[in-house]
Image 1 (cartoon, one colour):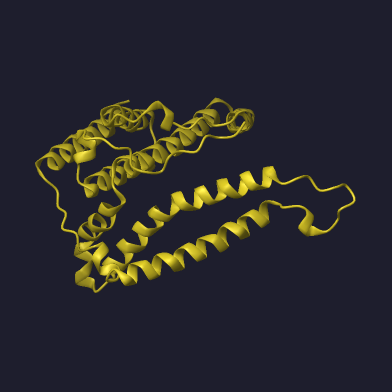
Image 2 (cartoon, rainbow, N blue to C red):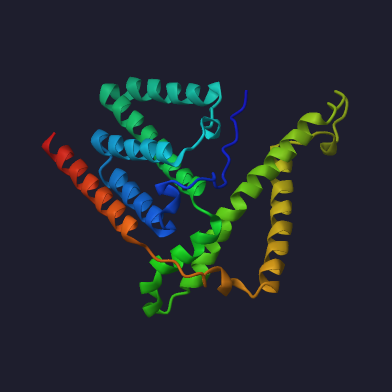
Length: 250
């Protein structure tokens, strides 16, 4: 029983979420992440979880895209909960569950952005958001391109690991008397193979980008927020303020 792979690619659609500016989605994820990090309370976590669920429903994310963790994933969470409750009591269990929920919610919100945003819009949005840093003579365009290429290369790396794992399963088992290291393929060998493939892909991608005019064209696409983005940012800001006030009052 293995964890089903999350399709880290854009889910087609024409919903409000898909029409939002990529920078708006990044700002919302950043704001929610800061809120849950600085104020990791149940009202804040509930607000972020509700936003993620409602956004996924509006965007029409299919149920098949939701990953199903294997049994050992929930087993590790249960072991951690038991250890914390034994050592620190009920308070330790609450803190552990809150930290686990925080991690899962942040991962879900980040993946939701990838599901609803074309990769070509990430670099221009990042360059637009970081444009004030240009006054400090910082390489904003280079940072935006590096982040966008990392997001673009992550699905390729995951797919490469899946292929290597499938090939490893199809290989016949080595006889018991085969002590040579090449007779068996361990986790380290798979990681090295994936890194070699990633280096080859990065070299090919660099040549393709150079042939198409360089990295400057990746951030040259003009993108800016609209009225809908202003409304969404206002609603998220008011929700964060409401979560803070609710936490203080409780």
